[in-house]
Each structure stands twice: as C-alpha cells, then as structure tokens.
Image 1 (cartoon, rainbow, N blue to C red):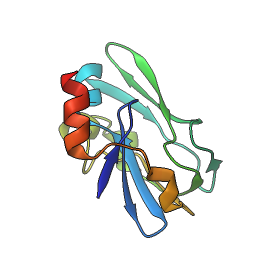
Image 2 (tube, rainbow, N blue to C red; image 1 turned 90 degrees about the vertical axis):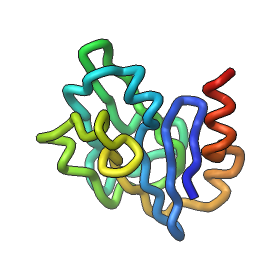
Image 3 (spheres, rainbow, N blue to C red; image 1 turned 60 degrees about the vertical axis):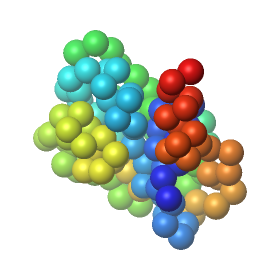
Length: 121
C-alpha cells in the first residue's frame, strides 16, 4: 500500500523496506526536474531529516525522510535522467529505499484517497 505525507512524499512499505519518492502533484508543481541529489548508500536517516534535494527550472526543494531507516538502494537512473520524476513520479521516478523501517513509521500518513482529498483542500 502507498502512503502520502503532507510534504508530498510517498512511501510504499514492503516488510521493513520502504520505497520513497515525491508525489505526482509535487513533480507537477516543481515543473521540469533537472537534477536529483541522491542520498549516500548506507546512510541512516531519522523521520523528518532532509535526505534528498530535487531541483527544477522553478526551484530547489528539500525532500524529507518520511521514515526512520538506512538507505539500501538509490535510483541511479535519476543521475542521468532526472526527468523520470516528471514522467513517472510514483513508479520509475522513486528516489531511494530504506531498510529497517517499522510499520508504525507510516501510521498517520494518508492513503491515496485521503491525499486526493487533502490536495482538493
């Protein structure tokens, strides 16, 4: 199941591994993405810490870790093709995967339906 934060990150939890990226809404708001600063492999992050920066023709935006965990995989395709975030934000445009994630870390985040309502205001 996919969860969403108020800061427009998405999280997909499989066991104790969370795949994280930015939502389609966030990618659309940023416009053409020109660079994604990926976190270091094996780096540990706490919930709320900046783990990535996404730069576009409009702005640079910090991306906050929605979970506590250790980076186990980064989406290296984004180094050469940052536009994947625009083209496929919630699929091929994922940023990284964290391991050691507790299910309680996603408690309180929005489902897709709740996120859609949140965006509608």
